[in-house]
Image 1 (cartoon, rainbow, N blue to C red):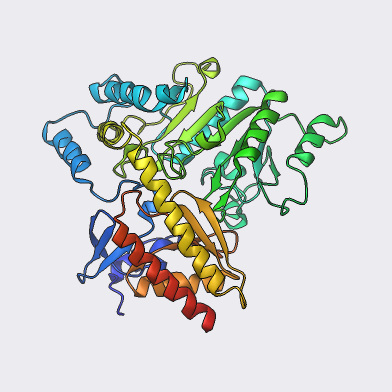
Image 2 (image 1 turned 30 degrees about the vertical axis):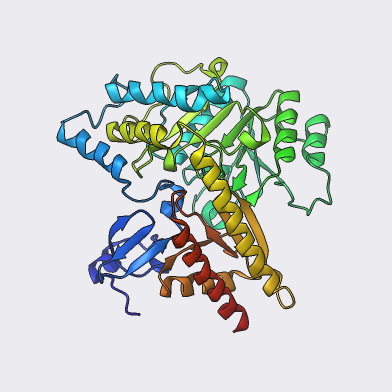
Length: 423
């Protein structure tokens, strides 16, 4: 297959680009779970903008909202001024998402992306508690700005900071030691031992499913134990739901299954519903001690994103149909992955991972996982890798992906795995 990539793009753009190296073609159109390249070839999308397009590309009803917003000369850039779309968003988010789940959060708009939401949460936790230390977890990913990077585990990404990343203490994520060590034994000991040298943390930040870290799903009982530990020691609990929220694991919030109520929650990626820049930091009302303007950002009031997010709540979260569909599709992916793993069990250990429609197939090496995704691309499927050595074939399809496209994409992965392992 001949790659179609303009020379001007590869010559002018920084070497920091990444996804275009794995998928060397020029895309022109996108609809639902299909991307079309310049040569007319269609690709099934198991990537969904790294979890930004939970409802697919250019959903027709969301697209109409965007078009109308511009055609009617509605407010596009509004900072934190009052606008009608901002009011409607907050009203709908509260009535459709928060109140039905018994969640009483204030909403802060910290900036356009997930890393902005994390920075705001870390800053506020330190302001509220007067402490500076943050506990994070092995293989975590929380963003690329310095504060978010300090609580991220990936050594490559951390190495790009250029300065020491301090005031964060990593702890083992669920199953890090294969359940040989009791949950939180180490953290509990450090918190209670006056000689441990651990400064009492302001907060603990955690993903319920580590996406970039390799689709590592925390057990519900582990999350409940962590929540109880934080309450016991008066430490704030921050759930990073940027990639796993907005229905990715089934419920709107990925922590719903555990029955916990975090002190703060960060959201971005699919919160706008259409791929438009938007991020939220949710916080319990008693934590809202910001001074006016103490935390802000130029692009924290993007009107079209408010409008599409509101419409997405109305379309997908007025009942539980999407949640049930996501759980059913996730179970199907899990069963297909289990079949693949069983088929190759005599020669290779493949590990099936994930929840909902965040699924992973861990290969023996990153090289083999890369061969699988490269072969999948040749066959018309976009799927990425994750994990500390890129050893996990990572699926994040749109929650709305048609069943036949899901089956077809999994057929491609099945064959690509067989080819990679036989070689």
